Length: 214
Image (spheres, one colour):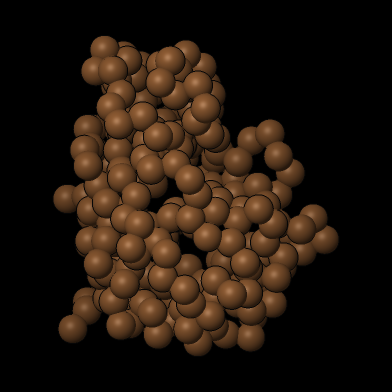
């Protein structure tokens, strides 16, 4: 069953810090986050078209997990390594989302490719969505709406990287089994999405919490 909360964070990483960033995210940050009660999975996708651009995301049981005491305690007490890493984030956009709709099902492993669309249109044409669902190698679609209250919570980590929520109110994630499907997902956008932000990328790491929470 898909969790209804999502934290999605887009950022460019300084070129001279890239390897150190990956070490931090792989070895400390993702394991730390997914051990917080209510966190289900963490992933990082490397985006095409921009050197050092990433989408970092965490699926949670509910959006409220992302305003829980346990999570806010972590955000307000960043480790030394986290403080160092966050100073190398450029053009950061971080949003908290609530799941609106989902089709398809997660596979046994995290999707190797993903396409993300940030947009403001209140509704997407069903015919366009149906075509996307039926496209070759598309395995799952998830539609989210921003939770503005949680997205705008100020924390110690946010004061380091200096970014905040984006202006787009909705997020569509398209998981695919091939790079061609991810690249093709948003080549023919509806007229209502001409000012949207579209990205696609490949999976670098995923980490799912296998323990129990109390």
